[in-house]
Length: 257
Image (cartoon, rainbow, N blue to C red; front, side):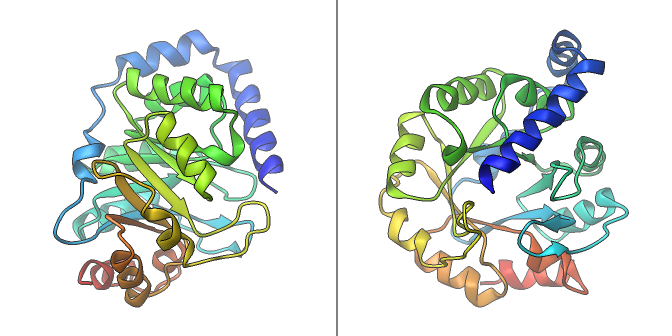
């Protein structure tokens, strides 16, 4: 599944490159105002922080929410106290677009994450051109040299990388690449099974000074509390918000943990 997701994302990026060459995307990225300081926005604090996600669908659950107006949803998240907004831009399985990210960027004043299957510099430049402040880099889908290359480019562009891991080896690789914000995803991207305790088993491997993000398996305030007790500085929440009748109220309940 993970290989298919990366292959599809790369094929779609290549199609976009045919109409919008690298040089034009790079110029657009460099013309953007400086990226927001996501490291500070997500830094450890007395209370847990939330990255709230704009997510229409997923391979494991299918359609979640139509989200006709991603900007309005993101604005509600920001008003509700989200420290950052994650926007799925993968189109085949998650039904997202870069236009969603651009709309969200224009609507909020908090950092915005491009959540996609990033594997080449063109996609990183696209992210900055669209207004992203944070870029997801999934260790499981990248050779170490490419991970380092992409992380360096993210930083050169003034953005922050959320380096996602699923094992002790991947945590070590992420740290070797220079991770400043490191996520542990409870969802195995090969099988799509969930292990809510994975974060707790790996969080002790992440040194002080690196922001720890718990991803997936958040359905209730109790799940947020579980992650917080296990050392999470930040939780990333998608399905539980977009499928809730009142996403802002759900976000408030998570932040009150």
